[in-house]
Length: 301
Image (cartoon, rainbow, N blue to C red; front, side, top):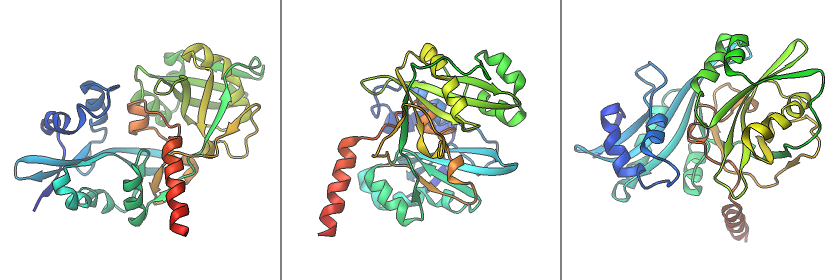
């Protein structure tokens, strides 16, 4: 019977050679190592779990643990990714999930589940997030005079509190940028990246601390200049009730799952996940969405 153990640094070379090397042509070993690096000193928060058959690794599940302050309270998160098991041992796949599910204080997310993983996870209590994207062009009016946009990372860090400074420091990556929008006595921290995995590069906003029309309108020209992208995308759940000119919400969503304790859905973002650390696309796969819709229609008949 295979057993589950926490993944450690000594196991990573075998995990990379067995499961990751040929998984994505856009990624190299350093990218995967960054994803499978622990950011939490707690022993029950490893960067993943492996399924062992004797001394051989036959399965892996990646885990990104983080602690976030939301509305003055600490919340523990775990993002699941890279759930891969050799076909011969697929019957033991759920063993890899047990250590995470046993921690009842976690909000657990999965931002890139396959259709099969999505079905299995929903039977385990996961629910689908509103993962529709809101798109808006980056060329537009000059930013409002009441807003100022700070682009210098050192200057931004000097103005942040400890929690926000940690977010920016943990995502100080070549593909990610940071902006601080000041609106009178309010300020808005934004973390974003340019995504090149689609025919037309676009800017994806991973995190925005203050959702408002002024904040989003103020950064259009700055994001266009910094990323070279023609449009930006943000998860629609972050902009509920925000009027934004020339924006459109896609009617089709990508698959995103959450199994939460107390964190509200409007605060479940893609920081500390494979989406931000590997700079993956969040645009929905229209072919997959059409296939899933067809399957649902057949089931009804």
